[in-house]
Length: 325
Ligand code: XMP
Image 1 (cartoon, rainbow, N blue to C red):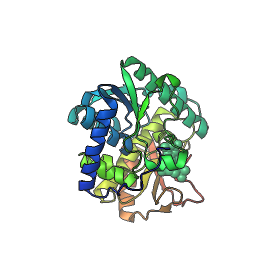
Image 2: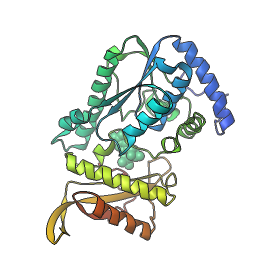
Image 3: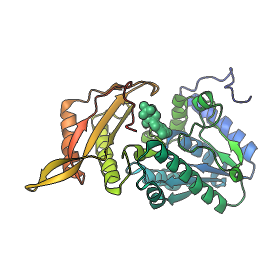
Image 4: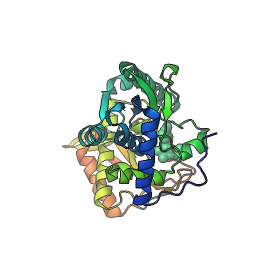
């Protein structure tokens, strides 16, 4: 019922409109929350980061942000969340490194849907445990945006998070629920969040877990994380950051031979994927300049442990999906 964007709401497409929106939301959050405490699962993605920054502006330390590191985040992500929210915005941030817990649960599980379910339900368990340690929480903030409402009858389509247990049935605070993604970015920018947080490429909730295909092992996961970091670094240096919809690496559980220091080795293969899309329902291949590809390949085979071969996936969606599993 109150899940329809008001017809009178104007499109937020510049800083002035974003500031007006921010002022209105800050007032409204203050009124709703009073002196209560609000809990938020802060992934570091655009939506939850913008909601966190809005709430910090409105109620400061009454907001408790919980950042769960499931061990499947990209290189530097948890550090950035801690740096931006704890150091720069002085947020009340609980950081939970649950890497071992997730990786132990995922050991030997190769079915993609089972992996997603384990990651989703483990996330809820960790978040619920942290929530129970907090006293006086009355509200739960969520980064629901308008497309989530349109696509899923108002339940944040967390793919990522799923439903929360009943004991966490707090009153919801969803300040950006009528905004489209581009509007959330304008608001984020106006709130002073860094560009690489506001304009970052889509990243799946199960994170690198779906790019370390099959049963996840720590060495292969490290190869995904390191090769992804190199790819992102080189794309940024070449001015492609923000211009290509989604780019990442995949390390499937197959090996090929290499020769290192005169000896034959059995190493992992890194696959590069870079696609353009409008809404992820279809995707075309980004024609990465050959020279850049060569540079990325050289860096990956010399810098990433256990890797001696790189392949470039040229399959559009359809028929291939964007992710490998
Ligand atoms: P596919 O692979 O289906 O992906 O072509 C379309 C878009 O969705 C993202 N994706 C996910 N996002 N949880 C998420 O939050 C998931 O399990 C998941 N699987 C795929 C993918 O990165 C792409 O942007």
